[in-house]
Image 1: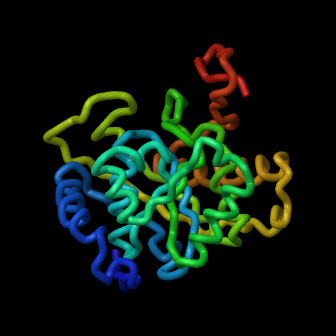
Image 2 (image 1 turned 90 degrees about the vertical axis):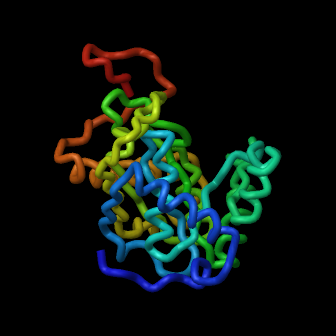
Image 3 (image 1 turned 180 degrees about the vertical axis):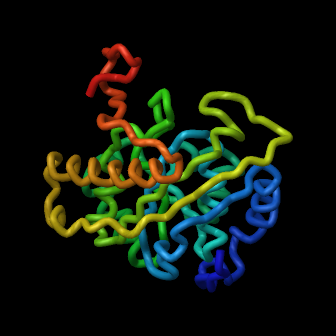
Length: 248
């Protein structure tokens, strides 16, 4: 990967520095991270980054990849985590974005997006909202938060696909160590959201989210060398077909 210039949010002293000094080398003991599509992550200004989620460990590798590209990784995090001693202080110091229990409202997203845009920061939002339930670890049906945030602030929405972290920490499994696995992190071009702009209709937001999840699945298919399922796992459904995949 060609070295890239750091954004001032990384090159200026901040709370990220001591954290990165610990996390980056420790992560290197577990993962050999290959970054693809580095040119698609904006070097400056605000953005929304939307990765797939198949391991409890992948926020670490996603954060390290973003840091290596010169940007400070900031996640949308549950508001309750900000109340935890020490952890809450670290989250606030690094500018993480709290997500209230009622963050599904458009007003909450608008306020968060406006603040992100004003500060020129990027934010990482898992559109699935939780670890995928798909038995083959494909992205499942997404929630509208990432799309809503991008539309509310007119921010670039960057799809991301990552694969390999599940070899380090399987979903709901135990950490495998010593083991250094090949992890691929791919940044896609920003989504064209122009056809969805100006609308807060649930149907429109769902359509835009489906397009986002389709792009992430397509990217992951390229990484894995396998076709993505035609229908995504729907966690709101409980009936299963003969293959064990939830019916959509």
